Amino acid sequence: MSSVEDWEQVQPVGVVIPSLEVRQLPAGAIPLEAVLLIKAMNAEGQIRWYIRTTSGIEPMELGGMASTLDRYAAAMIDTQFEERGDTGDT
Image (cartoon, rainbow, N blue to C red; front, side, top):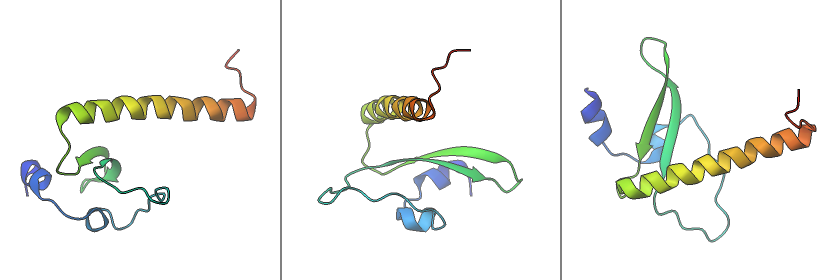
């Protein structure tokens, strides 16, 4: 199957990545769309990153989601350094 065919084939998230788990959403949250960044090993044994989105995401939304993820990841990293008492000074 070509990568274009792979991209166009839509299946439930649990079917595509049945071996992984995800943290639950807060009570009352209703999932609307999702972006998945998946680290996987390909058939040749090489580690690759794959991006998959649900079918309703527009390119502008994807850009906004990427920006939000960038800020969230930076905050998580900062928190880890603070918890360890690492100021980043050498």
